[in-house]
Image (cartoon, rainbow, N blue to C red; front, side):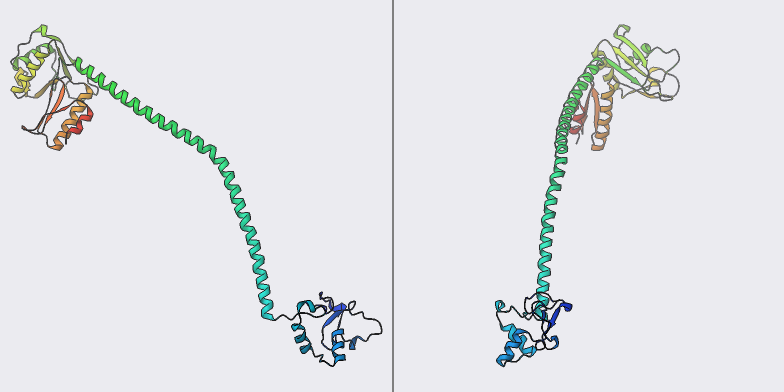
Length: 319
């Protein structure tokens, strides 16, 4: 927008007068226009002075002279600004305004981020503390469970030892066919006779067939015999080993001859341990696996040392 050559303020087209020499405008009020002044021939004061001094009043020369003046001396004329300079000034102004706004936005963003983070921490910190307490409780419970499991294993081991000790004088006869009106005492005395052991009634505390935990059709019940002396039990087992086992025909049972087994009476836990030891020994190429005095023994061959298996952890010895 054009400026007044007198006050340098913006000009309103309807309230200005224009110099007939330099064609620059001026507020009617600033030009002190009276009713006797001819507007069509009005000359601005600078052009009037130049004309009085004989200087040129053409617009181009007047503009060139105005641009050479110091900024403080341009009270009645506008400073000339080229199109490129004006574009540069506008661009710089816009950039400064954007930087200022963005800087304010970044500051606001950081402030909001800090406030949000503090707000989140105020909610999270109690949960983190609670979580840490729960973690400590869980770790303590794990330690307690581990300790309790160790105690339970030790108690189970002791109970198994006690139960096995109570069976030290027992024999277990597996796979012997069951007949009607049989006498288990007579059967065990016949088995002992086959092992070259003379067994009297007073040597036998009891001899009974026992009900299995899981009934299998066609499988006879096991006979459990309790003897008064462990020595007698060992003699019977030794005699049967020398005989390479025993069959139904050896004790006078009619029908097809079937092999049955006379073993030491192991606890259920030791039976499972013997089963696992046999499977692992076969996998590792061990030649001998046997039970004596209710303890499990292994030997890779005739020249290798004997390995004793008393607990499940002893299976690690089989390698």
